[in-house]
Image (cartoon, rainbow, N blue to C red; front, top):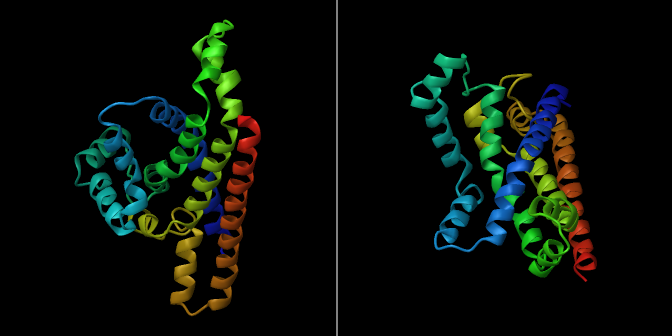
Length: 222
């Protein structure tokens, strides 16, 4: 078991889910409650990380974050920050590719809340912010749980983008998925088997949480 890789994977998953949750809630609620001509294009753009090959996403992120790019050179010059082959770059890439995993379950949760509940809260004197905190968030919690679980599980198992942007630096950018690949390349099947089982277990727990939360939703909508 590569404990350094496990630590990097766990830290990356926790930070990705934590940092994506607030903007994910805002974006998901906006998509769920608004209707405008450009909404299908916005939702299609959000779906791209689910459809494009990881190598394509990794290539564009590498081109965008590299020292030869405008963004990469500006960050290096102003903040001495290099996003290629660093944990910071790995986190930035993880935030981008995991956005749909966070947004889609939360969007469905907000869309399932009857608008009449919001109107009733407004009539009772609750402002929009208090309605959001006291009415919408408690009803949308299954979607929030599903978004966090799916984001964390996908982060733990991501391989292509992580390898292209972060490389395989021990203790910094080598995650469990990359460690498995390295162990297979070295014909260490026993170690690869152990780490693979860990990722399978994490994915199974995440999916179980999603289905468990989804079963609770009809009880709240009655």
